Image 1 (cartoon, rainbow, N blue to C red):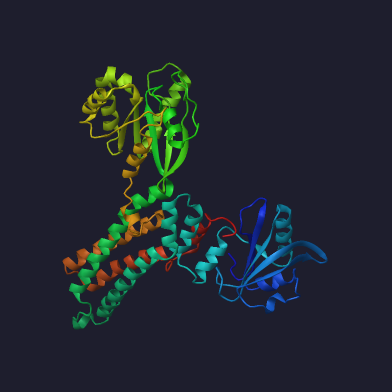
Image 2: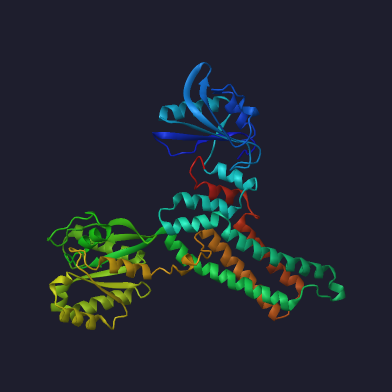
Length: 466
């Protein structure tokens, strides 16, 4: 990728709108825009101060394309760390294309995916983990994922890693110095203080690694499978959770032949609900395929809601308990919520009896009436309890990026080797190898250690214009 030329791209969403923003960045950005811009006050764009706005026209020779507002960022005082111009024009797709083509004819090049943010990283405006947080921020679709992305983009995660790396680097320098005086058998690095640092680094790394379990579900949403026999109200429950008629509801058993999925944000956490085909013995080929998909979705889900119809449970409770035990035994690691529907048809005594039968199954019981939307809020609150949001509430660093997670695990492995070396009084030269490797993995996270392939993979996932 050429990084010393001038690039251009649409920075706002594609398609027609009230306003569109075209971003130009590079050493000749201001001159190239000045060549096609006529200020209404006759100003020379190249002589104006940074961080100023200028009203005028984009012209192609004598043809006026649009009246625009130009934002000027000179020197390194821009998002990319290089001269940048942003053109706010009317949102017609025709106008957008005319301005883009005009700038391309005047020497600009179309930016590749994420190239503006890559230049920001390469010009030292942000580190690599902050650059990746930009993409997460754009993709955030709930309060929790937005909060995590904002914290990371502001440097919360990278500051924590940089501090650990700096302290480890100081000790590494002393260890390396010992190698230069190996014949004199001297120790410059205080082993007691070093052991304390290694223990603290391990503690922080383990906390960050553990946070990935929460961060991953917050970023990607929590899949919840709604399963049970046909005609017990699974589709009605989905509609009640979403507060809209998303799934077809019918008294005919086996209506849902394929899975239906939709998302809901509960208190800032995204949940993806999956309405599945009813589980039963069937000779219908299409319904059988739907039931197979039900078990596939249970495999993929992080939470399983097993739904029963209250009157059937009252009559066949023991048989249903056996069915619940089968699901619990088949998926022991998945939280199981047993939901008894149409609870309005039972008396208080009958509800208490059901609770007794389900009490020893190590699962959560919720009673609802999906049709009347009774108990739906309590069910939502129960789902929230499966997500440990304590770290999020306390504004702690939460890891959401798989690449960071992988580097943290590798760094922890190397630090554990250093711990073993300290305990076993291993020579400094052997210990230094593990310390260097741990520093390498720390550097991978913040971008102090990079290669073209890594950068290409990261920024390829960005949108063009960012």
